Image 1 (spheres, rainbow over the protein chains, first blue to last red):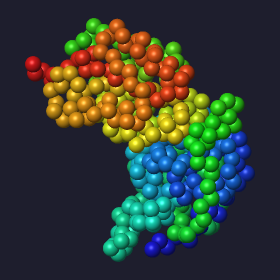
Image 2: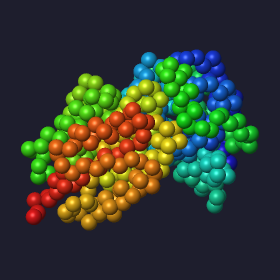
Image 3: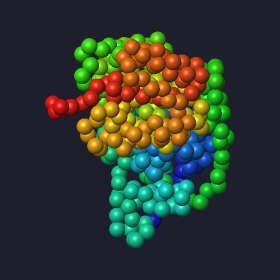
Image 4: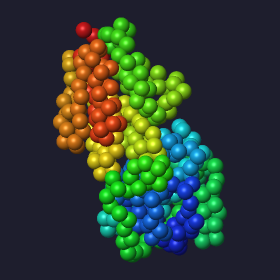
Length: 204
Length: 176
């Protein structure tokens, strides 16, 4: 089992506290989408219900299109593992307005908490991964500003970095495995897209 | 690349992308698109991104559209298979999507490894509800890509233009 102590929902609530029109938020399918919705659904949230592996590319396309806005991608370890190559694509562009937060509970949460590759090796027949360190992968891809957060004492700095530090920045937060309720945003993708564009651009 | 030197259809595509105010172009390096990719890379109005896999292009295109910019994905038929699940994004989000596909395994192809995905390309794109345009003559490239861009950006559709191998020329590696 993960020895993590951070809880994802209070953490995300702190990350998004006081979100204004300058903050554009994308969340990866599953838990991250429920996390940002519990913090408060808003038109400038784009919570994904699918498209696994595409969250970071979507954040990059948005960051390049809206260089004056802060773009924050919040996703899980499973989604990030599926789109690892996109971290190298982010690095080719070095968008200074893009921040990525991976909530790493070392599990595929939506499908029954099977171990992901970020789980430790030699962790029993069903709980073993590879000990994959996504922050090292991001650094190796060419994103210079990376880090892992494990303790409550580091959260204030994490929030500050994600919201204001010159990007691209990449952070992993090791979070507990928890049984949490579904807090669902609207599901219709076209509606989510239209309300986002209406709020951002003044047209759907 | 038999007719590359004499034809300027690559430049026609670049002009159409500019006419339609395309701001982001995504590609996996590709011989058939190389002249167009270089034109985009040296353009001041277009941001050009190399991808590690074609599927990144769907996420990028959705993100660009969320932010108010138009985009295009340049790929080879062999890359189409990498994009299929994420092609669904164009339906769930209903956003304009334009992709230009250079065909392999299509017309006198020498490499047997290119045939399965080359022959499967139109079928899998149709299965995902992508509109297909096809062009095999240099003089038809400009009007075809322009029509595709109109269907995408004005009509809100996901559109693929198949640039046939007959147009691109048969890659020979010096063999006859």
